[in-house]
Length: 165
Ligand code: HEC
Image 1: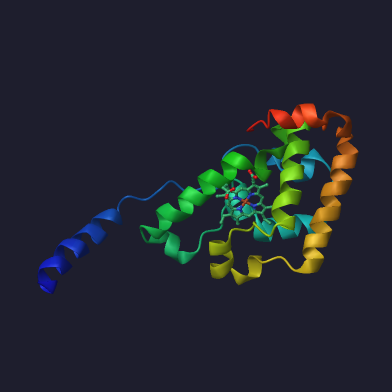
Image 2: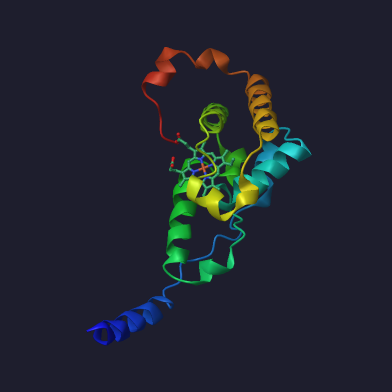
């Protein structure tokens, strides 16, 4: 009984190895990165790179198991989902209102400890944010939103139709 199942499963496993998702390795212009949209100091940028860029940029650094399916598909799914919400590599192409909205969301996910994703943190212990790093990100968000100076847009009217960018 067991033997009968083993070979079809093995064959299936071998076949899916050929179905590789496309890699997320740098499409688009590097000049649209968030560091060119407004000031991001080195320490904040390196936190973002370390903890967020794998899923929220055009430059994922892949672990070895990304070469093994279905792990590769699972990773790909996170990247596509993550980038559709927020892409630091194209941040400069967002409108000021979009930027402000993204920054607000960044603040929320950090305060609520939602990002980086838990499953990712389990596999990348270095991606976890220390209290100091969270504070650094939060004050950078506040500073950047001040710099955008759009707070007058952020009244109830804007919030009501929560746009999905
Ligand atoms: C392993 C991939 C991964 C990493 C790493 C990651 N994210 Fe995400 N992020 C996602 C996915 C997937 C979504 C969309 C689904 C969801 O909200 O859970 C998302 C959504 C978001 C959103 C939108 C939330 C909303 O309310 O719509 C923000 C903002 C965000 N991430 C910020 C960050 C920041 C900041 C970091 C780094 C500290 C980070 N993410 C790290 C995968 C990731």
